[in-house]
Image (cartoon, rainbow, N blue to C red; front, side, top):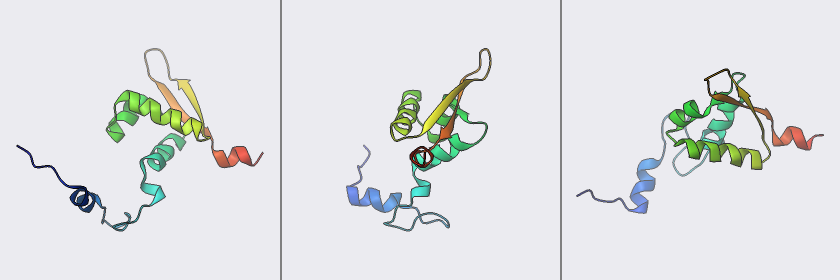
Length: 102
């Protein structure tokens, strides 16, 4: 039988200490899943649900929910059909800062 970790043990083992990563006890916005997803969708090529799911180790429904949360937080996300039989590509076309500047 597997022994469960306590909350303090889980936190202690989950802290990232590698170079360029947040120091123990500190969160950095550029390493959050949301920030990584935004960076991935900001690339010119965009990304499809399958590749996002694999990259983040998420189920497809979780990936779609994350895209919805980005839309609700003010990001404009476009969906482009890549071709017959190919999955749709998603790409960020507007950020909350750009929209508030108008």
